[in-house]
Length: 388
Length: 194
Image 1 (cartoon, rainbow over the protein chains, first blue to last red):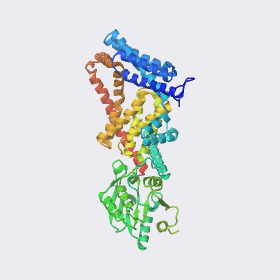
Image 2 (image 1 turned 90 degrees about the vertical axis):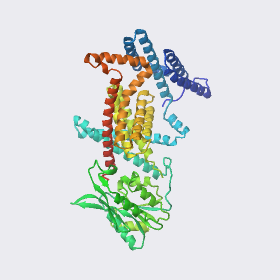
Image 3 (image 1 turned 180 degrees about the vertical axis):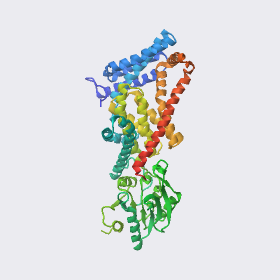
Image 4 (image 1 turned 90 degrees about the horizontal axis):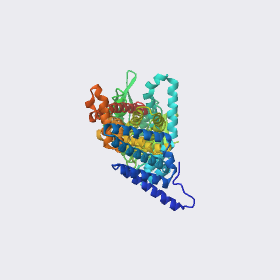
């Protein structure tokens, strides 16, 4: 971007800095004067703005007098002059029009001058000076992802143009918006996960820390790949070895060959409760196509509340609702904070693994993909007991 | 730990809004097409409402607005007051709408109404700031003279301004409702059904 004040030959750096400061102070004064009533204040504001431009960067005046911009300013002032002259009188019209012309010129000079002396570095430095480091990081992240977002917009648009005729494109616009917005949200999740995996905590306020050393076994796989079945079998195997279990599984409820909902099973007691029932997609809870039952969440909280020293915590599963901080998440966080907890087994679908890692700063993680092992339950038990 | 996600989401959605402003916004502005402000307002509204639905934290819309303003300043290379005030104002009004009515559909409807009524209100405020009350009164008389032949002369002045702002606010409220539905579809798409 364009740099700071032009330094004339022989002028010291300090002198240039002072001149620039004085110029910017005059510009600020012109902004005060420009909104005071009366033609005198408008003329004063114009004189201050011109002096400021001459001190900071005289070329700004030439840039402001671009034909198109000048024409637009003159046109707006002329229309107002004509309207006021017609409605009130010619002399008042000339006064108001002249005042408007001067104010528009002050704004144009200010905009060009500030545009030439302000760049990303200056704004980031200002954010740091104001102790707004997070804002600086957010702006930096936005700058970095901007090319990616622009490429996505172009690719989605190209794909739509290929698939639809010209007039169908208009009807496809909401679809385009949906795809782009969802993609942006995924990028944000990935950025969070990447920051977490690299140990960046500048955007995070630490409120509670998870007790270390807490081991976590992440069980993952596509939908319908058998994660829940594997976890229930692994739980039984671990109980058979005398290990204390806490937590729940969420098997599906099947009606007429279709998944009609989910129930929640307390792994320690075998108690069951309805958790969710399929509903109209627009009427579901938490932006899902399901209506949730309080009884299911209450049982989940009770099951997670059994976590104690030396226990194995099993959570099947953490979905997008939880990873947005809703659903079971509050109870899960409480359970994970149990002192002396041995290991936590957390089920999450594959696409959400980075988000899980971002949501919980996990010191020791083993990932079991149920689609990549012959006996998922056995693999989970081996990971929990650290048997190769 | 407190989640970093609202910050990253605000950065990304602000970048998306900024990208739209830099490309489509600049093109519409240069082509002087009518309702350019409304089109860009709708795009901003969709970004902000989706952001607020995915990350229901106070202030995220303001942060996304700051990001979009920053990108516009940085990449267009100049502080052009109109679009910058438009972006910052829209972010502020959407945040205000959600704050007043809660992070629900009602909030989105109110936010949309406020955000889309802002561009015509901004025109009036700018005219008043630049030319004073005389000019506003003179434009009112012009409007009355233009409407009188149609028997609508009485409408000129505050009733006409109220009518125009009301029409924009109603369209904005509908846009807010649509943006909330769109955000719901995005949420479900991300959730994969749950």
